[in-house]
Image 1: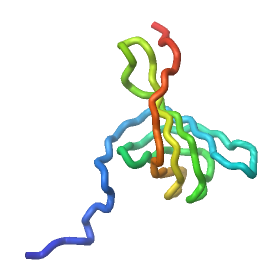
Image 2 (image 1 turned 135 degrees about the vertical axis):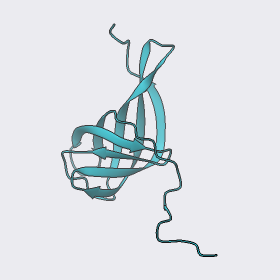
Image 3 (image 1 turned 30 degrees about the horizontal axis):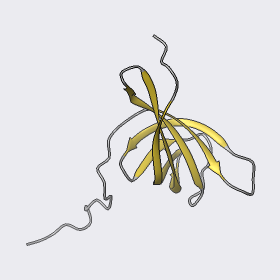
Length: 111
């Protein structure tokens, strides 16, 4: 039996193609907070792939806020707030490894 190890996906979690607005800030004690916006490309329980107008160096810690498609009690917008480190940046696309996350409310939605 031959096992094709070259095409084996190294990811440990299923990725979902979720495209949502994202805001982020670089967490650093040395410099002023660098902030930016982009859009998610895909997400898993372990990471987020998103677009960024800024160069994000691997190893930098970020806090991301993602507008969530579901609402609390069908009326209150939610956002996913995740903290993690940049593991890859290439051509305006960054990947972070999620180290902690929580859902927060975003205020009342406008009808």
